[in-house]
Every structure is written in C-alpha cells, then in structure tokens.
Length: 529
Ligand SMILES: Nc1ncnc2c1ncn2[C@@H]1O[C@H](COP(=O)(O)OP(=O)(O)O)[C@@H](O)[C@H]1O
Ligand SMILES: O=C(CO)[C@@H](O)[C@H](O)COP(=O)(O)O
Image (cartoon, rainbow, N blue to C red):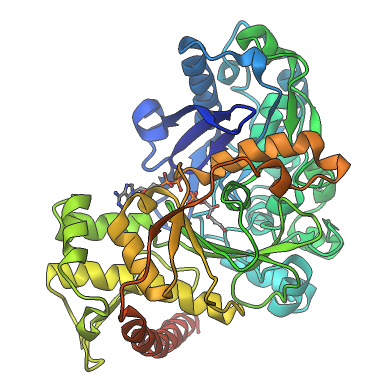
C-alpha cells in the first residue's frame, strides 16, 4: 500500500472489496523543506550525479503514518502491507545498524533513531548518469553489452544499481567497507516495516545489472566486476510475492497495527504499476509520471541492447519488458511554462487547436540526455524535413506530445510489440489526468486508451500485491485476487483519420530519430577520442 516515488511518498489502503478507503501523500519539497530538495532530489554540479537524502525518505514515512493516525485510520485492521520504490536507487546501511533498526524506540519517530545508520547520506537514484566508466568496465568484464543483456536483462545502464555500487566502491572504498547491507529503495522501505533487512525481490532486483533473470540468482561475474564481498551485502533475492514476516513491534506500539500484519516483499514502482493496472497479455501500459515508462507482460523475452527485461512481479515464470524515457513530465512542464504560461489548461487548449500530425511539424525534446534513444537537445523539423529553430507555441506543444508518443510506439515496436485490433493502452501517472494528452496518445497508437480510477497505479498495485502475498503460496494468481476490482475505464478512442497521419509521421520520425541518434553518438565519441 505504500509507494515512494521520486517526488513524494504516497499511501493507499483498500478494503476486502478492493475499494480504496484511504489515500494520502507527503510531498518532499513542500512538506519537508528542511532537506532543500527540488523534485525530491539533488542535482549535483556535474549535472550527472543525482541523489536524494535517505533520512528524508524515513521522515516522510513518519509523517505519513502520523497523518493517518490523526485522521483516525484504524491500523489494527490492516492484514498485510506492501510497497514500491523508484527503481535502481540504493541505500547503504552502516555496520551495526541492524541492531538500531531492530530496537528502535516506539517513543520516537523513526528518523530520530536511524540518524546515524547510513554510510552514504545521499542515495544515488535513477536519474543519476555519472557511472559511464563503471558501465564500460562491467560490460567488458562479462564479454560485452549483449552478453550482459542476455544474463541480466539489460546492457549496462548508468542508473542501474550495480554500476552505482561500483562507483561508490571505487571512489570511497572505506565507505563501502563500512557498509553492512545495501538495499534498493523498495527493500529499504520494507526493512523499515520489518525491523530487519528485507531481501530484494526478483523484479526490482532485475534493475541492477546483477541478477541472472533466468535463474534468479546473483551473477558471480557481475558481482565481482562491481565490488568485492557484494553478495553478502545484498542478501538473497526472493520471489516478489514473498511474505517477509510480521510487522515489527514498533508499529504495533506506536500506531496500533496488529502484530499479525504481514509485510509482503516490496518491489519497483513500474513492476507495482503492472500489478495495479491488472495488465493482460496484449495490453501496453504507459506511465506518465516523473519519467515516462512503457511496459508489457511478456512470456519469452529476448533481451536486446535497447530496453529492459525484468522478472514479472506477479508471476515468477514470466517477464515484463520496460522502456524508460527520462524526458517525461519535467520536459512537458518546461514547455508548458515556456508556451502555455505554466497552465495545463492552456497547454490542453493548444492541443485542441492543432490537428493530428501537426501539419508535418515534428520535434525531439530532450532537456537531459535521453535513455531511449541516447540523444540530447531540442530538434525541430518542418514538413519538408528541414531543421528549424522554433515553432509557434501551439505547434511546439503538439510537436512535443506527438514526438514523445511516436518515440514510445517506435521503440515498443522495435521490442517486437505489434499494435493489434484488441490492443488496449492503459495509461497512468500524473499526466494521465489530462484527456487532451491521452487523445494524442490514442491517435499515435491508433488504439483506445483506458485509465484506472486512481492515477496512482503503483500504490494501488502494492495494495493488490499485499493481498496476493497472503495467498500466493497456494497458487492463487493475482488476476484471481483482483477480479472484484474496478475495471480500467475507457478514456478516449482514436480520432477518425488520425492513423494515416500518424503512420506517415512515425516513418519520418523514425528516420530522423536514427539520424539524430547517430549524430549524437558520433559527436560524443569524437569528444572522447
Ligand atoms: N493536468 C496535467 N497535465 C499534464 N501533466 C500533469 C497534469 N497533472 C500533473 N501532471 C504531471 O504529473 C507529474 C507527476 O506524476 P506522478 O505520477 O505523480 O509522479 P511520480 O512518477 O513521481 O509518482 C508532474 O510532474 C506533472 O508534470
Ligand atoms: O528508472 C526508471 C525505470 O527504469 C524510473 O521509471 C524509476 O523507476 C522512477 O520513476 P518515477 O516514478 O519517479 O517516474
């Protein structure tokens, strides 16, 4: 029921009929200003290193539980809890912290007891891209990028945890040596509820460049390439539906939780969204949160140099494919501020006043180095495919949104996904509130778009996973557990005629995208030569 994304901490509680009975959040920048984060993070002066203060996450948990308590929430009725964290980020527990965690006094908020527990105060998070040299070394150590992808589901990515750990070890070996346990953001949050170090689940563990996704064990060659003695610091990975144990006494004493309340393994935010959206095979899920992600349920994946294959969080025999785009909401917000006076309403009006296909005007908008494709900068092309330096405001807004969705379609198709007549697009995340944005999504994919009641699918998915955890050992599927839950709702259908326009746009977009990527890659390699 808990989720710790980048910008804040969110909570949802559901009853036995799977109705949402409580929903709340803590916003890091606004509610915890003493940490001075922007969007929940610190972007360091090199513009590559991105971290979040780990104690801010603990304080946010204290705060949200206090809010629930003051609203009269009945904690004693909670039978199970689970949660999700932004993927790839890591937390470093100092030697001896396990005792402090186990024995935290229920008289104190948790952040006070855990003040001295972290050997790295600012945790590296998914936005970090400062580990290029560690990525090259890891790929080299295992026999190349494709070999690493075949073992772990992904070639080396800078934000993936193994590379982040390798950086900490190489820059600060003494800090690494002082660390007794390394958690992901998800297993860290689970540890706070367990009062013990929680294991990493298979699904979030697949975002580390360390797990053999087929055998579901740590890869000795990847571990050795990153840092010595790493296996011991990570603990054994477990199936995502595992019950980790009962909630620790701290929560019964301070908030009135039942001592029988079970803690089910926490997982990554995207895997939890897959559960919350009740994804079926053939569907495509698009999360429009801080980052944009696209994911699919997949039976027999073939890991490639683009995209990620993760263990499926709700079915250990299958997988999920994931594509992540860094220039998501923050990019849309920047263009909203520049072209629509900071108003989503005005932004939406611009989408209504321009035609699908944008009269041939196309744009690529990457304020920060994109993950897929690896490109940066703002690149605009008119209907004659000539590069132009600017667009009128409304054209700019449509070029941004069409470009973002064309990139998603093209890259999903490269992973082998085919839009079929039964394809449903399930949209979630903050920007899925915006119907005009969803209309463009529907037109570009030529498929209907559905949403669920809450845009907070990762949090809802965590609640579903908590219930599923109670029965998963008896072979009951998540689909069975959530069959009473409200079905996704049809939000928009494709505009007649939009398909032809978007097909043409897609082809041109693909051509320019390939050229652009090559130019960027060539430029960056000539820089390092
Ligand atoms: N009406 C809207 N139109 C477009 N984007 C929106 C709208 N409302 C919120 N957003 C975007 O949603 C983002 C937050 O999404 P959310 O899913 O809550 O983030 P997270 O991934 O951190 O959980 C904000 O950055 C904001 O840009
Ligand atoms: O890096 C990825 C996925 O690979 C991101 O999707 C993170 O999991 C964080 O997501 P937000 O919820 O903050 O957008």
